[in-house]
Length: 198
Image 1 (cartoon, rainbow, N blue to C red):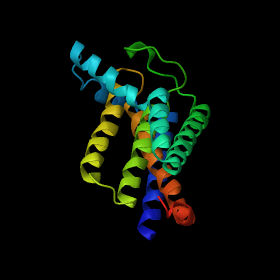
Image 2: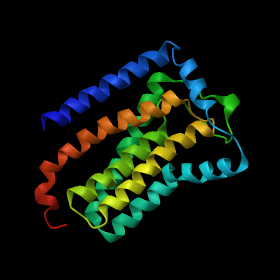
Image 3: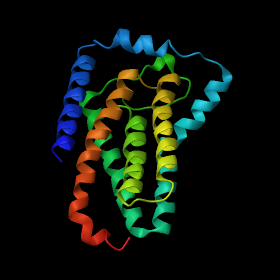
Image 4: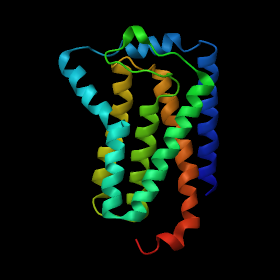
């Protein structure tokens, strides 16, 4: 229990540190270095356009609906989580108001850049699914967790490759979502009576 809150505090400190660097334009070299690591070609462009859709509102909404149809309680848990992440991302973007790297974009998007909404959605939404699978000891949890972990990572990479986010946006999105997940999953103790018949 104590380790969990140590992790939470560390994640918040990391996010604050990244935020400080962003606000003071101290991530330029790092962001450029990471972006220039990627080899651009048609295959990777199509691939990352496909991958990035898994963190879109439409795809996450469809997944929430499917889960809700199969199990209403799971559906409520994951849907409420997705809404929380969206609201948190909107609030943070309005606070920092960082412009996107418009000269690098391979797809058209609008809104502010920091932190990455797709990175937050990927880590927060699919991260909760991983947590639920282990919490309730569901079958094939190891295989699914590995696949979702790869997907979360690739979603973050896709945002950098497609030029719609800086690397610092993506890292910050991952970090703040993990911190949020610690808070969200800590509520499960209060929900045990409600969840006991899942």
